[in-house]
Length: 120
Image: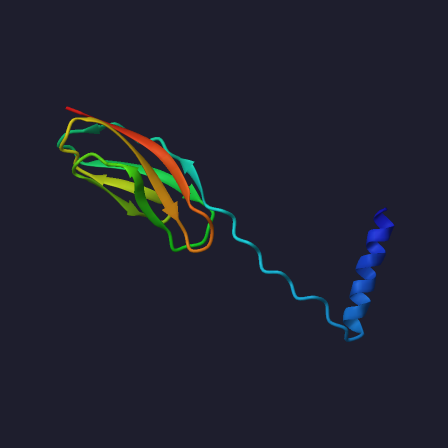
C-alpha cells in the first residue's frame, strides 16, 4: 500500500513539472471557540475582584457578555485576549448564577454557566 501512495505523489509532481496546475489549497477552517476554564473565585464585599473564564479557538475579535442571569452589583465583564474577565468591587451579598458567553468573528458562540458567591 505504501508504494501505491508514493506513485500518486510522483504523478502529482510530474504534472506540476509539465505545467499542469494542481488544485488551489483549501483555506483552513478555524477551530470553533470553546470554554477552557470556568471556575471563578468567591467575592468579598468591598474588595477588588477578578475572575477569568478562559476560552480558546475561534477567530478574533472576541466579545464577552452575560447572556443569562446577572452579575453581583459592582462587577462587570470585559473581554481579554484569551479570557472573559469579571472585574470590579462586589457590593451586595448573595449567590449569583449567570451565563458568560463569548462570540468571535466566524464560528458559533461558546457559553459557560457561572456562579459567584459574594460574602462579607
